[in-house]
Image (tube, rainbow, N blue to C red; front, side, top):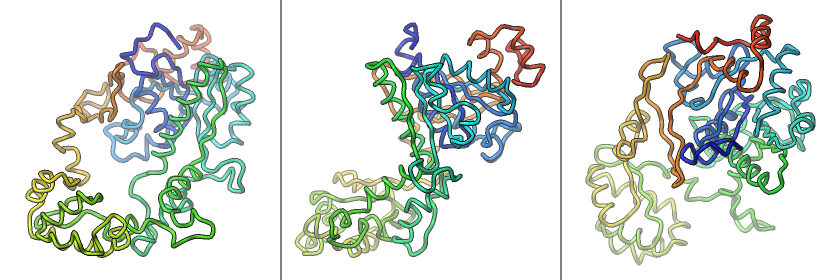
Length: 411
């Protein structure tokens, strides 16, 4: 790590990451590293990250809103890894890196000479993080996958079937987000161990096993015991009525779980006698009778507006919150108070809205000053920093091994 970096740049200041990943799962990992101060060099093929085209609308080709949200605070280096020269350029970048993140298939990495054994020989301090669809020990190893494939295989869609009668997908790429965050966490662990041992290591983070662990910890329940002592699944969470509750003019979310919260709720709805009802008089009773409990909750809230209920429930300290649509979330007053969404000017895309960091470090966070890069925007600058001479850079550009624009020639 570069000791000249300051804490105010984030806890990972001085860590150099070479990011050879695409779409969401890998970029979600490296976004977390970049947002917390790491220098992330995003290596892209001449066509760019697929998310430059998949992420919805754009003002300019290759700069979709979704791409920008996952790739801020990174620098883009465009290298043609189909050429031997391109592979040599990438290996030189990795010689001085702290972390290498990729979600390429292992067979492709082996062909490129980017496997752990090959890279540790030239950089024994390197943290090599491989995000896989399926772990290498199982029979699914090597298969391709995207988020929906993992949601189906890992039981996420099955939880919807247990709840509502038919399998469905969570309508955002949840498994990519979660696996990416787990990968970032694992990299942090490995960096900490490297401070004690002085050597790097290989990390494998499989999407399938990661999500299967999430689902099983939540719903294995009675099957934890051998033999099982009841049916699978947390009945409260799988209940079809476990959802935002209708009010007179909309919806709210409410979760009176403890006895104190439930009894205060019964008082608020004018049903104090329910405190001694054997179905609802304890946490265990309400859990066993969650179907009745949710039905009671739903019927009780229809008589008042959302604002009225939220005022009442806040006063009696019962967990409850407004229901946000995808549109209204951007205008949530708490997020506005926290300055969570800011308006900034992107050099090529004009005025954009940028999502803030949800966490804070007393030692300082990284200022969100670097917008998502255009394809190959930083190629020449990064190569210069990594010791490439101008003749080498000019030759690589001429032979189309790398692609980029000289910093002094940018518009």
